[in-house]
Image 1 (cartoon, rainbow, N blue to C red):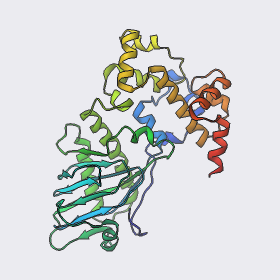
Image 2: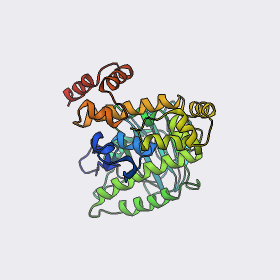
Image 3: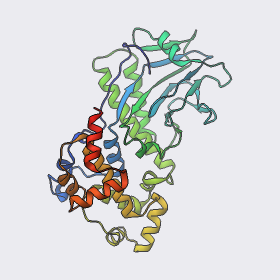
Image 4: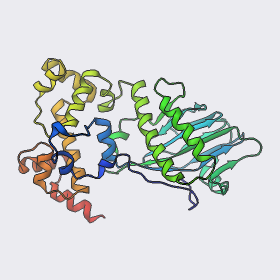
Length: 344
């Protein structure tokens, strides 16, 4: 991130429904007629309260090498022109990025970009601050720019960030030629046009593009790595992915393993084994964890009472809901709500 007020920043929620109360979201309308069906990835992104902060366009002439300090959550970017190298300090080897490529950096460690990994590193934040021009473009080095890129930061709700970050590698690289990179190529063209000059509505447009980039990088990563751990990888499995979508779409339904297995065309035993192999936990344990995650978000951000929250996520009894919540998080729903609101 740049430390000057001149750098445009925009914070946009990736899904507007993330601000709905859990009661309105799940119980106001009959499940069969609910017009916005849930899916696991959309559900998680809505709870993460994704905000994007886009930094300025970077144009550099060789040679150059920059080191950036630790950060929170996820860095992202795309290469408009030329090649560059990226690596996470002490974690990954240098990876070459070419024009059209996108990346995510997810573990928060210091990281480096360079025209060549052998070039001496300089303080990236200082270079950015010292070379930011009036048009919002950072121009570094003498001569013609050989590499042009855009990038920024995604910030997530701190309590929920592990839902996604724990399932991603430290560096996600999506080459321009990857089969599922077509939407990213289109997004890069938009980034290029938006950052060439100052235009009306530029910050709003940049934030919207950035959020689309996050979703499409995750889709491309998922397509290239269908056996990723946890629910993220399981989404690529035809049967287990379908079961996950059903649970998310109708979370208040009193699901039984036999019913889920039947709906995806598997025997009970085979379904449990495959679900556990891909997701890491049995089906009903996953469902309980997700219900409690939604409940925690509702307690933190909404005003529904405990009875409404319990009913919205499939519990007929407030007592049963409270007991399950305390078992998972070590405190009652009321205690959790009081604690998070006292910090505001």
